[in-house]
Picture (cartoon, rainbow, N blue to C red):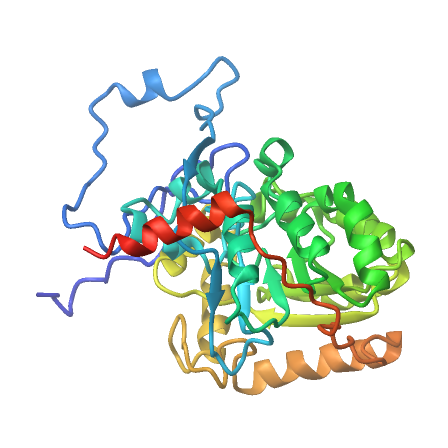
Length: 383
């Protein structure tokens, strides 16, 4: 029971955890499905085992685990999302963006949405084969696939595993359209596949840029490409004939929000033809993780940032209502909307329709006999 005469516990710690180099989260917050609650206690050994010669916290190595997924296409009916089908070759994301709405999905694995999410990556090694099988079904009805929505399909693990490239090869072979979103310059590696598909009206891309400030980006999204490198990627994709837009997601009050117009101007100059934005979302464990990041990196404005967030969320950290979760509501949300549309109009963005991806050339290819037999064997095993 709280004594009203005693000041409440502050929302932001006076001495927040020291950030780890190259990581977004400053803690390994427990997932909401864990039964046992753990509390960190310094027994005197902490300073001995967690520091290196340079004085920085011990480097947290990324681990990549192979996963054999049962399905690969995810369907949704959310009225505020412009796609119905998505594909994610990975779970978890090494980019470490502190605001990532997908962080809570690691709770389903019994892992933390914090540091675990960005250091324990699960690669769906059978993703290309599952996609082949799905597209070969006689019952399959083709519609554009959104690639890399939950976690970045071109994150560092993709350099060696090439799951995303193999997925695109499957889509290319079958003339199946898709739209991709990424923060990685690694997408340029796959121009040989993307450009011909774009020429057939079967591919478009979006690059997420939250800020042009490299110092903010270094802590906000520590292992993603730098803002300047992402601008080069926009130019490269545009020059290759791939329709490319910019996603300013999320807009964080008093952190990235002042940069909105500058981001749009730089992206328009680089060749982006479309733009969109999303206001900061803090579902489930993302809220305490983001507050920890604010306390570590922006203690001087933490309360101010969260106060403005709550202004747009009906007094709460987050409101999941479909009508407002992407853009917020209230006077400040309306001001953001006006600023965005004024800049877009001035820069000539969003003048032409993003285009309807062409589904008319989709080819259904029967899977190899071996794959068909394997599928039939699994279907017989009902119990």
